[in-house]
Length: 177
Image 1 (cartoon, rainbow, N blue to C red):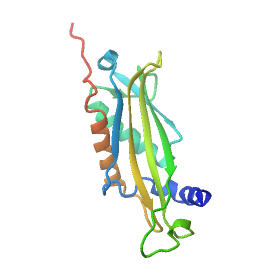
Image 2: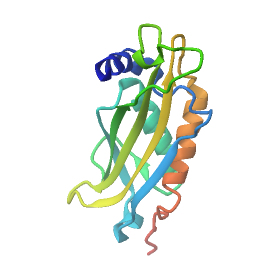
Image 3: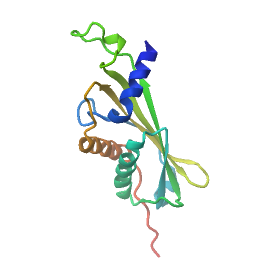
Image 4: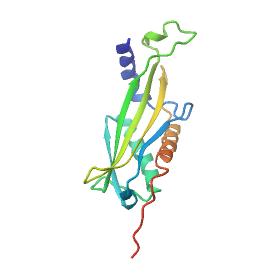
């Protein structure tokens, strides 16, 4: 049965991972570490992805950049003082039985995939690799036939999650001479 779920997840995954981001339940967030003293001194960062679906990369990078720009950090694709590493993890979940579908647990063709999509993030010093900040965001997905990602609501939900995640990240300290 778990192989069936993984097969369905693989089939639905690329196009539907953030479906329903604007609906309930919302994207959950967790900050596991904030922040080293050097956090307020950084001015530039770049983004690195691990196991992130290609279609999510621009959204995740853009929404993080909008939020971190408000903290005084500038995104760059060249050398930077820090690296925001984003790891994508999709965890298949057992299907929940529905009253109107006795065969729900099999997740046959045309069925629904249920999984948790998580993005684990670490902000690290680009030279020393010391962790400056760490957190994650996650969303439970139930994806069925004909479903598609509504990009505008998904972007809003991701940005709201990023705002929560980086709420306590310090503003960049500007040295005055």
